[in-house]
Amino acid sequence: MTTTRTQVAIVGAGPSGLLLGQLLHKAGIDAMIVERVSGDYVLGRIRAGILEQVCIDLMDEAGVGERMHKEGLVHGGIEMLYDGQRHRVDLNKYSGGKNVMVYGQTELTRDLMDARQAAGLATIYEAQNTQVHDFDSAKPYVTYEKDGLTHRIDCDFIAGCDGFHGVCRASAPRAAIREYEKVYPFGWLGLLSDTPPVSDELIYVNSPRGFALCSQRSKTRSRYYLQVPLTDKVEEWSDDAFWQELKLRLDDEARAKLVTGPSLEKSIAPLRSFVTEPLRFGRMFLAGDAGHIVPPTGAKGLNLAATDVKYLYDALVEFYKDKSEAGIDDYSRKCLGRIWRAERFSWWFTQLMHRFPHDERITEKFQHAELDYLMHSEAGLTTIAENYVGLPLDFGAPRR
Image (cartoon, rainbow, N blue to C red; front, side, top):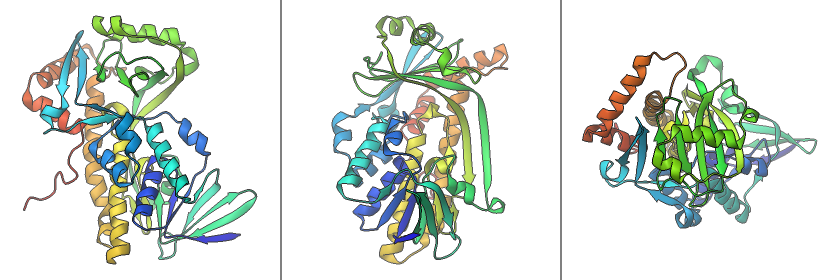
């Protein structure tokens, strides 16, 4: 067995693990990252593309925001389509001047991977049988297997950034953990294509045929989604069938402007709301999908992960620079306050925009009445805007 020493062992080389590693490097804190799959596989995962200001600021703080600002598209609004009519939510106006940025998670991950490689920082890809040990003590460590050998990483802390199916949350003692979950009875069929977006801003669609979303990754690359039953298989959906169904859910203007083309990627993602409490177990911390999942309707998954990373990064800097454990002790509470608010918004937005299998006819009327209220009320528009762009980090903090 080989043994290596680092200050922070990060399990998982997705966006949260890479972002944490880069921030710690900038602060002079040593970290190693262990990842189960290859770097190419990580980059091949098609995920979110809407960044809140918190995420944008962290990329800048990590020194990897240059390409994001050059290629990312700043959006100051979204459109809501129901009853065949589109209504714009002015995010900038109703959130006090905030916007979001369209920048694909794949591109963000690539920026972080390139920066880590350029700095010569240690990332172990294709690490098999990764295990976390003694995280309830002052001397935790991580083991993994690679090239027929067992390797050990001694560390001060373990950051569990290894996703919903990762080893870190699974290793937490069952008596010390509570898990909350809601599984939705449908999925999102997503299609990526090198076609210009149908609209300058995202269109969220409440249709009698089910939810749809017209999103984008750039001015020449589009991402579209359809609500489909969980029983559907991606192989059953040809590109032509996808485009025809999307057209049936859009308004006349969008149908006329829609440019179709061959899919670059097509997949079906299930939807769930999931939260783990707490997010700290001794000297192991859960961040990102390891601790929580949101339905993608509210564009919160990547942004919540970035918030976790910020809180954990700040806590670790405080520990090493100020010799204080206050941030570490408060990590779980601070994260969960923000997580539950984002979970609530994502759940509410999902309920508002989708057709559920056993809904009665009256439910559609309720949805449209609520949408009418939201679109014609400053309070309603503010509710959507301030939640969509991301609530302030100190939201809910006691006033002095």
